[in-house]
Length: 391
Figure 1 (cartoon, one colour):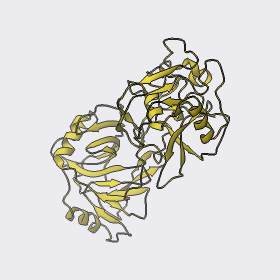
Figure 2: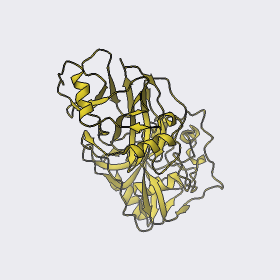
Figure 3: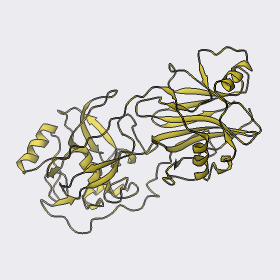
Figure 4: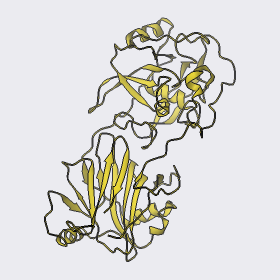
């Protein structure tokens, strides 16, 4: 198997979403690069001084809730993939309770106590999607302060404003919300947003989500209040999908997908899939013939190695003698994020995928099953890393 490896984190879609990242990597694994604190622009400062009891109006509208695979410190079993959510308008306190500049936030209370204190103010606890909307602002920023994490938001939270001018969101506190985590596979409980001052940068993202028992309390756990009718929209909980299933992606659509990505454009010519099931049988028959408990296919596979994780793995050929294996994150219908690829020059194939539902974190690709040097691995490493290992 003659291989040259190119790994590229990039958003590509049949609907042409545009880039998420750029630049080829030279390693055998690819994940979306986490923004460094030094490279991030300074956090957005408030345009005017806040005052006691200040509330901000968040307009009705749609926004993209959730996050893309590879976001820093993302927990795919809790954070759903990006999806458009429609919310009605509401008001949110400029600061955590008691919503008074210069006063320390109220912490160390259970969710029920936080809800009671909001009701006494003629308000209510915010839902988690309302919190996320207020944090992301009109420009859909990943952090309340802008496109990257600024450590100043942890040490001086009142100096960091979201695009809606809401202060201290995600900076130095976790905050109770009125929403529940209803996961089928993970811990259930109250949905909490934001992060403590000492937590990793990625945990301060607007979409970052955690879960606590309703009776919990902590020194870095506070809350803020909202007003207006509560929005009924809820987070779509990530689920465990079938580990492997065959899917359809016609060669014409794959060609278009390759052509839109500058790093795979050279493959977007005379693209053909290997014939199913004959090509898979050929790969097995070239070796000793022992399948070792694996199933074989040359059709594209949807792969779910863990709850909330969905990938598309496919093998095909470009021209007469260049075969390739591609691994994409599945973002939605016809919407993919290229995570890893291996290109095999002077290899006409066929290349088959070998998989077993009892082995979640791994599958193989091979030109001759059981032959030394002719089989590679695609490995999933939690929480969201893909490694292609070749002989």
